[in-house]
Amino acid sequence: MRLGLGALALGFSALALMASGADAQTPKKGGVLKFAVGAEPPNYDCHGATSFAFIHPVRPHYNTLLKFDEPNYPKVKGDLAASWTVAPDGLTYTFKLKPNIKFHDGSTLTSADVKASYDRIAHPPQGVVSIRQAAYEDITSIETPDANTVVFKLKAPNASMITNFASPWDCIYSAAKLKEDPKFPEKHILGTGPFKFVEHAAGSHWVGERFPEYFEKDRPYLDGFRAIFITNTAARVNALQAGEVLAEFRGQSPADKKKLVDALGDKVNVYESPWVCSLAVIFNVEKKPFNDARVRRALSLALDRWKGSEALSKIAVVRDVGGVLRPGYELAASEAELTTYPGFGKDIKKARDEAKKLLAEAGVKDLKFKFMNRNVPSPYTPVGVFVVDQWRQIGVTAEHEQPETKAYIGNLRSGNYEVGLDFACDAVDDPNLQLLKYVSSDKSTINYSRSIDRKIDELYEKQKRELDPKKRAAILREVEKHALTEAATVPVIWWNRIIVNWKQLHGWHMSPSHYINQDLQDVWLDQ
Image (cartoon, rainbow, N blue to C red; front, side):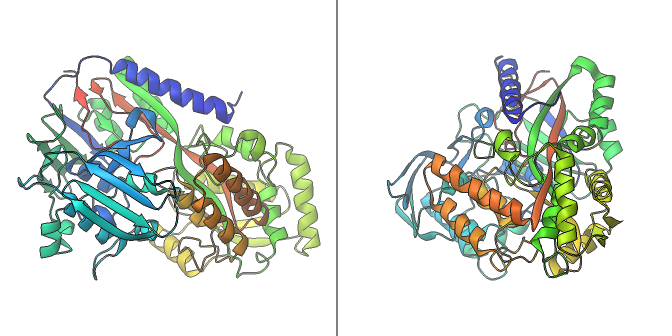
């Protein structure tokens, strides 16, 4: 029997409790953690990075203003910040920094370094890439009244600002180094984090060692870490099975999980969680007949997401049915709410009858088109095959094409497709991020449907400015119902994160994101 979303959330909480219970032992100092990474970073700049291949080896060298409270996600706590206050009108955020924070070169961190880092993110100098610039567009000024105080002034309230300040990508850099060269972080590592940089051997490994002057008392526990780059999935799993590495922090497939558990038994811990990643069918509204909402809605109605998820979860890293927000997230739709949306009900015969009727009304009873998907075996191929088969059951013929990733992304961005399978993967649960796939394409560069929907734009701004969580949730239901009825982008299934790590690894906490909880500050080895 399939678990409801509430049960999934409860299961995730129970998993977290078991993990924290296991880590109730007294941490041991020493040892070098070896872990596998499936790729390596193209450069060293947090502010312009997007990949887990960057976060996993690089993040242990840096701190951020806030960070997520690892066992209590999505709560946040101070990282460099000792405390913070938010003005009642939501327009002023004041942070007090922890004392005696040192950069790895021995210089002292001050509020000037925080200001310089966020100025770089919000207003990048020429030649500097800031991927998340838009998240900070509401900031009008950053003030530093003293060396330990930073004040952010906003032009309008933003319900996601605390989440933004906890972003794992917002590494705090040395203001002095940025003044000398705004692109300094691209080729150099200089942070305040628990580990100092030792070396990056391209194609082989990345090494960090314990920073003895780290501002958190008795941290880190490890003497160091060694990230080993293993791009081949089978080789990565074999290294984990052999104990050559103790962890891989992105995730394993159901088949690889079974292989590891069968081989290692109680020597490993297994964690699972809904993932802040989803796959969605996307319609190019500039191509007929996909400019007709009836056609788009019909193709969504044809998908039996609930039964499909049961089958797909056995063969790919997907599991949960959800709307525009991750299942189990506090602002996401409940299962009862979700089943009221077109395409998400559980009476598939009724849905498909309606789909056929809509296609007939639109004059495209024998619809044929090309369906573009990414040529990545998991989870793209099985989900694509599922979608094509579902459409066949209402008399629609879709030719499944899978260009390699560069061409696939290029086609999405240029509009060189009819219908495609799009993906979204974010660092955290945040409506301001997840809804960018639905905001009008002239406002959001990642809405590849090329659709313009001013109602969604209006609701997006409304939820963004609403600081009351209950009122914000109500607005999000309006966004979701409208988006899924108009159906320019429709979620199919959400990913499922599976982690298998050796039991001697302690102090690491599972989360719905493979981008957070990776500073390794509290990780220790029982050896």
